[in-house]
Length: 368
Ligand SMILES: NC(=O)c1ccc[n+]([C@@H]2O[C@H](COP(=O)([O-])OP(=O)(O)OC[C@H]3O[C@@H](n4cnc5c(N)ncnc54)[C@H](O)[C@@H]3O)[C@@H](O)[C@H]2O)c1
Image 1 (cartoon, rainbow, N blue to C red):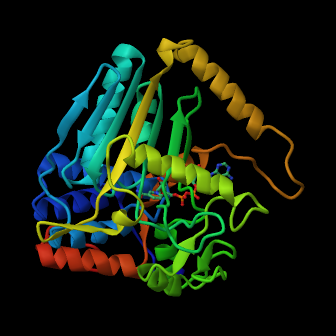
Image 2: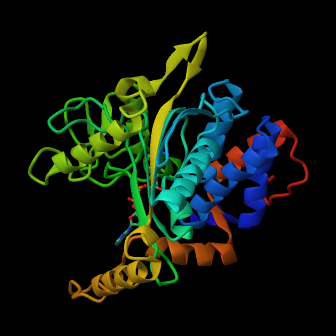
């Protein structure tokens, strides 16, 4: 399989994705934001949410599900809080501007919290936490998503894979950044496995009778019928505390829907408005200015000590390294900046389709 992989320089791929969105009518500045979020995912080794998602956005834009010209309404604006309506624009652009607003509020008043309704899929939640980290702040970003996680003891997908992302600056080359779904495996990883026909790990997905499933293609098919569910962090039932993941996924749903009178649970599967299908979600962003507490330098010093103590603690025999969240992605980024972004056959095919349909002849890929 590895002989099918082709590496493409990250700048070229970012430009290509930007031009795909411009070709679909997205304004240049917005297309650059979307491409930046997508390439950040690929560079950080999050293969599920970068170029792999580009064709999904492409198809949805062509179906009219997303508005290419993103219009954000400010519904409410206070010193430390805001409520925005994204009007079904491009989720990455809405999320970027919402976190920017949270950061500006935190610069002035110590905290910034922005809730968003009527947005769309925004890619990796961690990108928006990183925006706060770059300003010396703690950043949190959450979003709800299509129903995938069942409640504990249930077998109907109800909650999205609802990522809960929190990051903080350190004195090291890389910050702390926990950026993941509240399910054990998220839909993008199922798609990745399906593209290369690789079975899913045991105890990550159940069918509509609670039985374990491992065939990624079958899982995707059954998910469309709402007959497969992605288990929450902690897994099935109570023995390994699946109710903890279920609880955190519910927190994300609340922050993404209840504060903003937004879409939740089954409605995230799609609703029809004026004859047009919409796939809406909500988000919530928080920026905490460390200067309003102990100050950035002191915060970073303690944060760094915590990270180093964790990595320096006793290891299980046979294990060579303990990581802290955000570390692996930093080193993958260095490697991929050098080597390029790996594209499997299926992604090469997606790129070819978008390139041909939009006539992006200025790009010459080895497979085009
Ligand atoms: N927009 C959406 O609807 C949506 C939904 C779900 C997930 N996502 C995104 O998908 C991406 C991938 O999510 P995922 O659930 O597959 O993530 P994952 O399971 O790959 O976990 C990644 C996180 O775990 C950390 N990590 C990995 N190994 C570690 C180790 N040994 N020690 C310490 N930390 C370690 C990483 O640094 C990272 O923060 C995320 O960026 C998330 O935001 C988006």
